[in-house]
Length: 327
Image (cartoon, rainbow, N blue to C red):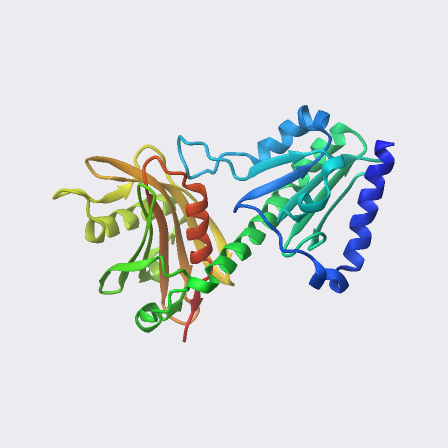
């Protein structure tokens, strides 16, 4: 009987996809806190190796938050028989089940809007584990993109209208009025938002294009040198001689990526204050200007001891990835 119900559910998903455009305007608004996922699956699967595999990917610790081990997503698991009504209105849903053949798909706005619904089907538990390993990165990327859209939507009514960044640096960023420019020197900008127990921060400055990671083998050292020189010049600590530096405990990770079609070097790690007990996570993006011989560096960092940092970092990442260069 359970297999029949599950097969009907998958059929509903496929049919709903085909009729998606017609019904979108009648769907309720999706709900849920930022970075949350509803997983629909049998409790026995959830309590076994399949659930372990899902937790390994979807509840893995956020890499740049050391010690606190905050999960990538907050997960709510529910059985299929209660997946109805408002439980279908979650913004991100993953349906996991066994059936007569393996299958994977991601659909938009099936039960609410905006919404992502992913489903993984395997003939056996081993197949499911294999499917999870294969497709988890794609599902995570889709859910994160969906969450960025939600964060930007929440910005809409409180956007910062100051055009100083456009006039001075020829860039546009979308960010809420909760962030204020607390320092501007030369072409260096420091934006700050007050949060529980501290601040959420964005640093913005420009560097010559030829100066950054010209040699991959020394890229980490160059990134640290760049960050520490900026910290010494612009980000002081509580006493003379103290300033923000890259943590000596962990070397930052870095990778080459693309943001809005702009070549980018992304690095993540921990910052600390020289000779003082204070630190936290940072995400640094060196973004290539397509029309000028420069890169814009935008870094988000959190200074809020004892405060959950995952969603604050995600908000900073969303702001940074809104960048547009202005000619």
